[in-house]
Length: 245
Image 1 (cartoon, rainbow, N blue to C red):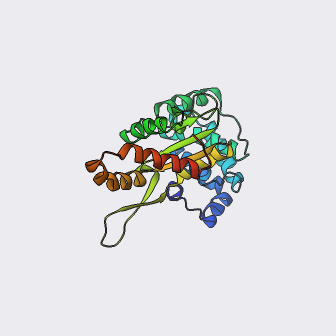
Image 2 (cartoon, rainbow, N blue to C red; image 1 turned 30 degrees about the horizontal axis):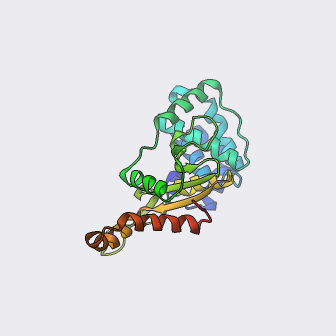
Image 3 (tube, rainbow, N blue to C red; image 1 turned 135 degrees about the vertical axis):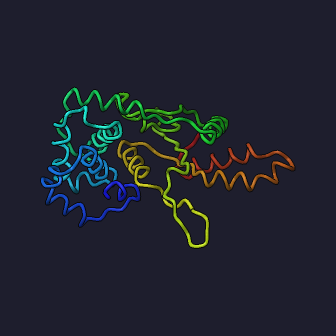
């Protein structure tokens, strides 16, 4: 249940407060994956400080567990727990060397891969005058590949994120096709982490890209102005965020 709350960005205080009161009972009956799920849910929802006692009560048995018992997914979650907790000002006891090594190895397995959407808009940003690198690590070390920034100018600490469909929650409307609505919990958590570290973020919504492509069909057919129009859109998005190319 907790991961579902984290995915949709819902923070039921009574649920987590109740778990905090009965943390010991939960740990005794929970699997390693369930403990990792709950730790991840807390930090994804930004509750590391608010429910610090619960997080610490879960983290201690987690890092005392035989590292071989964790799945890759659980190990990746533990990496994120460390990062988000630290950014929230919560110091967790360090994981032992054996577990830490497996966490890093698992994190490296989950990497972001570029899409045609990202390929196109990286080229457009370059043409619009925004110098950047792709898949940029914003955390120290190389143990968080899956938290990389799509496009970034590291010197200016400006990040541009291409928000594809997987960044949003799907809303089912009566007598209508599914609609991608507000962003999901992990996307919100990543942005919160980056902002705490001093990054300025510009988001490119895939829905804007689709609308722009549709609106430009007639223009393209008549005069071929699509590329310049898209660059104009990107310059405007940068300007709205207070960023100059």
